[in-house]
Each structure stands twice: as C-alpha cells, then as structure tokens.
Image (cartoon, rainbow, N blue to C red):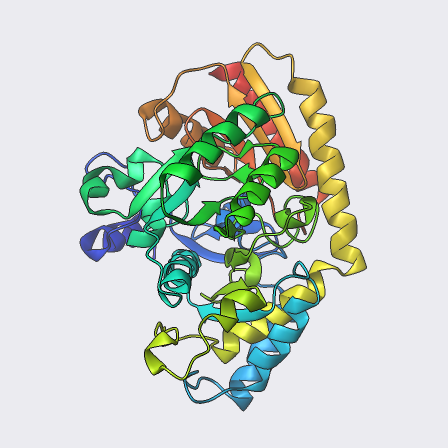
Length: 424
C-alpha cells in the first residue's frame, strides 16, 4: 500500500488535533519507530527531534519497557482501581516517592496530562470547601499551557487554544513569569492579587513554559512566588507534565527550587509514551483535609483506567532507565552538545535568542510569525524534507530529543536548523 493511500484513508474519517483541515497538508503516515527514528511506509526515516511531544525520552520501542509491559499483561491486564489495588501501582508509588520532592506524600492516578491538572484544581477547590471556605480564584502565569479540559484550559493563557471558551472558564488571575530583573515587580503584583481575591491555588509550569515556546524563567523568582502563596495557604500546583523526568537536567524542574509545590502533576514521559497515564501527587496536609466521617468530603473523582497495570509497568521501567548510568551519560552529552551548538549560532543574524536547559534547546528567530501561520508550516515542511521532525512554536524552533539519540542524529538536527537559519 502506498503512502498516499494511507493519507487518503486517513482523510476520510479522521479529525486530527491542532489542525485546520481545510488548509493543512495531508498527514504523514508513520508505520514504525525505533530509538530516535520514525519511518514512513516508503521507508524514509525521520529523526524525532521532539520525542513525540516530549514523551518517548528513552526512545521508541524501548526493549526494557516493552518487556515490562509484556510480562505485566500476561499476569494482570486491567482491574478497576476503586475498591481494589495491585502491586504495579503500589510499587510505582514507592519508586516515585523515592525521587519526588520530599514533601509529596500521596499519589492520585489519572489518564493524561489535562486530567492530572483537572484533578489538582478540583483537589485545591475542595481542600478549602471541606474546611468551610469558599475560594474561587486561581493564579496562573501569562502564556501558560496546562491542557484542554475546562479546568486545565482555564489555567492556560494561550488564546489560540482558549478563544471560543473564554466565557465559560473558571476565575483565573494572571501574572507575568519572573525574570532575574523583574522578581520584585512580579512579587508586588502577586501580593496585590492575594490581598484582593479569595485565591485557592497557583498553577504553574516550573522554569519552562513549553507550549509558549520553551520560555524560561527565574528559579529564584518562582521560589519567591511560591513562598508568598504558601504564607497565605494558597496551594501551589507544579505542572511537571512537560518538564518532568530529567528534561531540565534534574529529575523534576521542582528540584531546582528551594520551596516545593504542594501538588505535582506528571504525565508524558511518566510512561515514556507507551501508555496514557498520569499522576497528581500531593502533600500529606492536602490528603488529610479529605479524611472525614462525612462521606461527601472524600475526593469523588475517578477515571476508568486509573492506575492501569500496563501503564504502571511502563512507568516502573522508565524510572529504572531515568537514572541508569547510560541515560545519565546521554542526558549530560545532549546538554553539553546543545550548549556548544548554541554558542555557534547565538550571533547569527536570524537568531534573536538561544537558550538551553537540560535536554531543551530553544531558538527564537528574528522573524515575526503566526503560531500556526504559513511561515511556521514552511519551516515544519522544510525540516520534514530533510528527515527531521520538529514542530516550531510560533517563531521558536526547539529540539527536545529522546535521550537515546545518537551523536550523528543530533548533529543532523543541528545541521538542519542551521540550514533553516540560512534559508528563511
């Protein structure tokens, strides 16, 4: 079967995310993947330069993860998680608690990143409701992104996603991210918001705003904002869905902070892309607020596939890989290679800014572009033609490759970016 036949079949019934089908090109059919490579039906290979939305950090079709899931499905495929429990979930809780910030005490399972945020927001609102308080306001960063369900979307600040739904969202007050020279100004803005509103939670992507264009902000500044919120018992929710599991150079972006969030949301690399699963972890004080002789004070929120045994098996295998000597070596190599390349291009006439954190390399172009405009699409196609999958975010080109990417594959990504800088 030819590639165009798959594209034609796809077009007949399928509706793809983030796609204007009247304007978009046919979807590229991928038939197999291994390591950092994707293959179309004609056999052409593409380097997955963004780890398929930052999930397959240990590479596609990782043998260790496949083996763990295969063994698990032969023993226990699935069982509901209400009234029942199982060893993979218990073991995963033990292994995660060993690497999460030490103020985390309980894990709640969901099935994707948006629902992890949704659960965190509901936990926060009910935390105060159970105490007889009505707090109705969330605090979030400008240009943040936390998902597409309504609570998560409310916390997000990108109009390209939220536009048609603005009148239906939760109450959210936004603040700018703190940079080294704006910390006091942002602290002052936050203090005013805390004094004028009944705030329940501060929802944030720690250190890196992914969908906004891999924008970085100050760890010192974020520490100060968390401190201000916690002084007034406003719960702090760290959205580690993109940043978690080594991407910023530490296990979690929150590990760069002195003040730890009350709630942490995990997904994506949690299962290395092998299974849809997410977790909302929280501190003991939050969990304790739901303990009561009154049944309705429990957290009545559930997902059919919560703590799916196969997802837990994938996550356990991923944690073993995360801090293995081989993966640590590759993570270090990628960060060093990014910094070396950043130094080479920082003075290019098309480069407005280049930045590196861990496995993340982001380049802002000195070109005005719409987020999903024609020039962005031209760049996307330019990279595909060269066998590299990158998805520019507005005028930001970024790469966040699988940790297992080879030296040659990483250099090909850099070469393709340099070509783009010299072409557009």
